[in-house]
Image 1 (cartoon, rainbow, N blue to C red):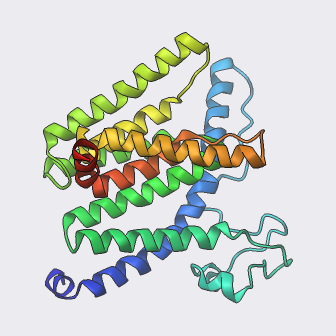
Image 2: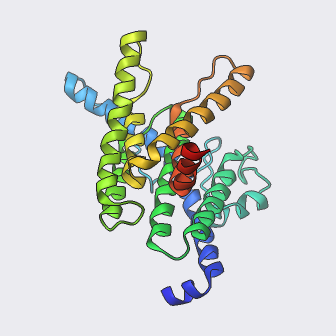
Length: 281
């Protein structure tokens, strides 16, 4: 099978795109349900610690159950209504039960996941680096969606992604193990230091601990060499988008995580070229 894919990279890219469409649909579920699941778990833990009666909901929520339903009318989404992108077009963007408009975010995430994954498949070819980078991309898309919705970068995704990066680079998939370990440490300590200095000067938290771990994650995947470009691109992206949003809504704030994810992905793929340009321009 590997030989067939290596002989026909277009087939590999097509398979990646198709699988990623379905993964994108699942990432929508993760982005919606995981924050609710975490909040419920934290509430139960706090009640136990304080000795209060538990108020855990009767309807247990996981990533796989209950089955997806319309939040407006409760209509259970049937299998044919859950096909990535196709179902949205067939239903004309509306619930088949009550006609409520379905957010364009769902097919947009599915398409973005497929296109970005296919781009990585094209860039790396049929290699372990492609498979590793695509898995990382899926996890980063989930983190980005959650951070945009609730300003949270869950350890449930960030920490496994960091360890997967170190494990992959044990075999030198994207960086040497030495550079990966150094990158994770330098990434975390850099943001920890910036956060502490900001707190000393301003008296408020300037960075969340999720940002510390996310920056360390990119160091673990690409080595310490990708960190300067990641931070530069993240800062420019967040500043530009943040100012544009503030012009429209002054009460809206943009988390740093999505910008960091954009900077990290670009630096992982084009890090050598960016560093060369920064040093020798």
